[in-house]
Length: 196
Image (cartoon, rainbow, N blue to C red; front, side):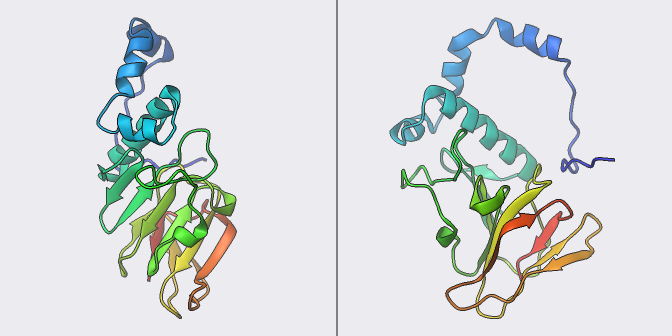
């Protein structure tokens, strides 16, 4: 049985034919309008195409809806004591569209934080949290391979828990300037992370 990470949310299923009928009349003008929101100029300045901008906004909207976070830039969603930096559709690595055209790297995981990625080798959206003692729910859809970086102070251990909040993994203790990390982790059994 497959369990999807859509907790506490009621989803309405719209048959594909109904969705198609509702959107068929919208055409290209709707796609342009969707990409012309509050952060469209930022996305354009960062070199995104119109299609990338529209797809990115859909991804950001999904993260906002599922986390209760707040969009603060074209691809950043701030959540309580952390944030998500959403990868641009078609790009392997996330990049902060407010400040750079270069992809982020594992080195961009802020000191004293835990960072996670949905794909191996630090690819995709970046999820970052810092507050200790809290069960942070990992983003929906992170049901398979991925990667993480425990960039805490020396000796700190991050812990990962399943749906029932039972411990499934403890990271190695962080090292000064190096943290602890796994470029080919498995998010499948993980639902929560305690940063420290």
